[in-house]
Amino acid sequence: MTMFAEFGYQMDDLHLPYFVYGTLRPGWGNSVLWQGMAEGLHDGQAVVYGYGLAVNGLPYAVAWPGERVVGALIVPNEDECDRIALRRQLDALEGYPRHYDRCKVQVTLPGWEENVEAFIYTPTQWSPTPNFEPTGDWNVACERTRLARRGGATMITRSYSRAAAPSARAIAEAAMGIAGDICIYTNRNLTVEELS
Image (cartoon, rainbow, N blue to C red; front, side):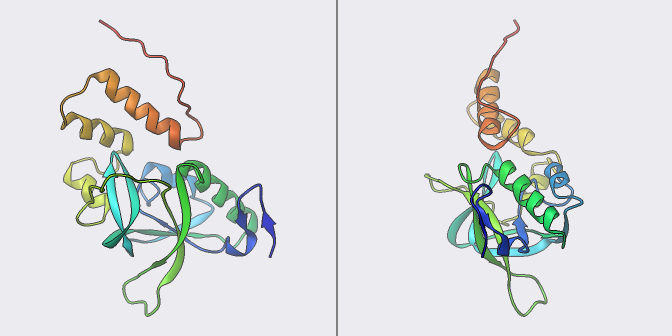
């Protein structure tokens, strides 16, 4: 077994699919990160039990007994270079290992006798009792709030607008803070200009 410390993974697990449940699902904006290196299968049919879908602006799969998350499987191509590139892309997007952890889970598929082993990205820390999406499905949650296929930033703004109406600056700072934590192209250094 060869270990690549730089990448943080073992070569013998690169063939495993990824269970995705939010903006990496087929049709969402971040699906471009895996297109050409993997195939999206069973969208809306793949289920992981023992995790709940916490929606806090962005979707989070949180380990929680009695809950479930609905998503899709991203199955890597046979090419080893594609598999390595895919792992690096997904780890970078999810902020692994700081923001998210990459864990192995069992995915249930309709009509399959056995579960499929796959990776899932789940937050490294979660303190309050999560507000779970009852269906466990990010697509359903977004459809219900009329935000289908529009991405996380709009969801963040909408969730704040239903609360105690914080200032536009507070919304922007919160959104950019989240982006700084999870995106490799963003940092937490902000310059805020206010127009009067």
